[in-house]
Length: 277
Image 1 (spheres, rainbow, N blue to C red):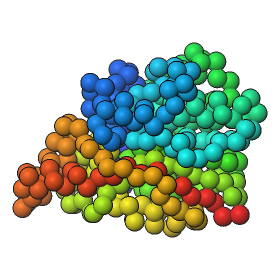
Image 2 (image 1 turned 135 degrees about the vertical axis):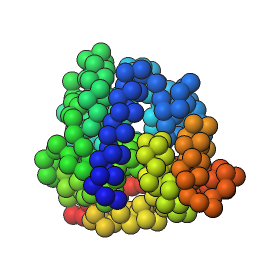
Image 3 (image 1 turned 120 degrees about the horizontal axis):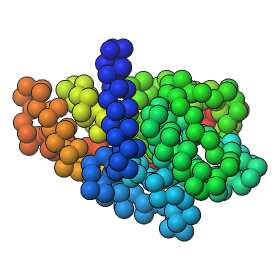
């Protein structure tokens, strides 16, 4: 991918998520999620404890995730946690409750509107061990070797240079530090037209990697013990599927029905790994 393409994608992603922050809606509208399986944000929230959700601001959850990166990862009191692409702050606030007053959570997002929303949510919740920083995942505004756990929820698929994103996560982790990411992957390669479609990319589809390649990117960045800890089918909502179909349609010889079938290639996974000691 050229620098021009990467820049265009980042601008499109920033614009789309700025809109979600302003309107407090999810990607497909009507309560459905950008990166979730199946198509209702309520299904994603089923991965969370209802009692935990009741204790955080409603605007912290915009239905933009595809799993719960904290579900199978222990968060220990006093640790430092960084959330890549923190959005309205849902996972930050949930992690902060587990960390206690001696711990700290840093949410990083490249969209100013999301940072503003998350900071308002922090004020409303009285969470004084959470902060939000404006920045890109490929250049995290966090010091080397200062973090115990990195989490992310349906965001790395939106990053043009995924190996760089994993390398940045590795950089900020302490030796032995962990990463837990929920994301969208595929079971087979997407056609070039889909991968180059900005519309498909911002719908969390065009940038999805084949699972084995995704895991390889984490290993290439330096992580070890890279493994899938949960996996489920991913059903695109109508808007997402049509964006993908349009991208496929730009590739001569790809029939509409074949494009719809290809939309079923997607999977939602949670991946764990750690930085070597």
